[in-house]
Image (cartoon, rainbow, N blue to C red; front, side):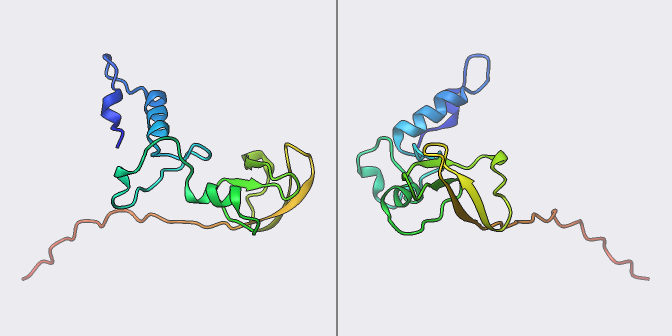
Length: 130
């Protein structure tokens, strides 16, 4: 595993760009989308190097409808691209999008989910006994 501490500069700051490049070279993050790749037991013995995560691999190889957290595939030219915030496709349901490569429009299905973090529990006050 590429350790962040190994990229500390003499001034104490971390060289995040060099760290990310080392993670890519070691196959710890997907070279397509940048998501972390979870290595399975015994996988350290396999050859390392730039790799794709399972989601990107499926997006690139499957002819079926495929889900991905940050990228879509054009059904016309097969170009895979990242969805940008300005694409206005972040509402649940069917959304229309244009391929930046072939300029064809197509529909994607967006699934929006939320996660909530609750604060830590407050200290319990001892009940007074009289």
